[in-house]
Amino acid sequence: NAGVMQNPRHLVRRRGQEARLRCSPMKGHSHVYWYRQLPEEGLKFMVYLQKENIIDESGMPKERFSAEFPKEGPSILRIQQVVRGDSAAYFCASSPRMNTEAFFGQGTRLTVV
Amino acid sequence: GESVGLHLPTLSVQEGDNSIINCAYSNSASDYFIWYKQESGKGPQFIIDIRSNMDKRQGQRVTVLLNKTVKHLSLQIAATQPGDSAVYFCAENPTGANSKLTFGKGITLSVRP
Image 1 (tube, each protein chain N blue to C red):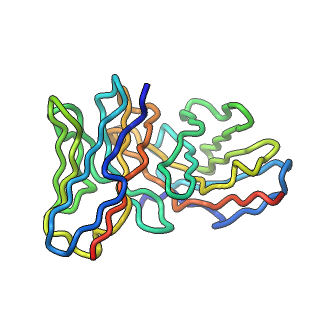
Image 2 (cartoon, chains in turn brown, green):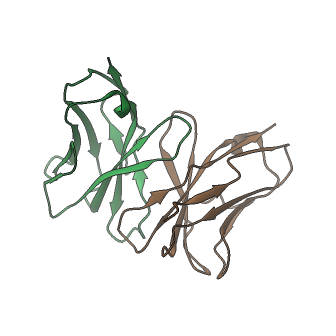
């Protein structure tokens, strides 16, 4: 049973470009969460999705950030017009249901130059 | 505001000794707690969890203790090994918070040979 798969592992973007981060949850998991981690800090919740639905996006910046989890395919975190402050590690986690252990992927490290 | 915090930023222990990592939380509505281990360049790895209707839970070489009276969580690692060196995070999930976790800042465990 493969774990949570994220790609790419490393992503470099110039200011103003778009970043697309992908997450394939574990088999049988329909709940996906995105977190952001700045250096030497804990993870900050961004968004919680189930198939085709955004359940909680209270941690998402109001502009430039969006997330989706389509019926088919991976979950996508999209950052438009990236700025240097977007540089961070972005982690995806999945779980089979609410309030149970969530398993994390290896993360995508975004660097904006 | 609500927060989850760790008392010490670093902990150094001798190989073979027991380690105790402490965590304070402030949201009395939290009913689910998880300890994660994160190695450099990797995603958080689930260690152990506990629900608010319990005060102790044991795993393989690890024990989590929950004191709801003082809002305190601890992780005990028996016979600490070099492979235990990592950053440890406690995370809480408030009731009704749609499974989004609030993470503490993390504590670095360093095991001396």
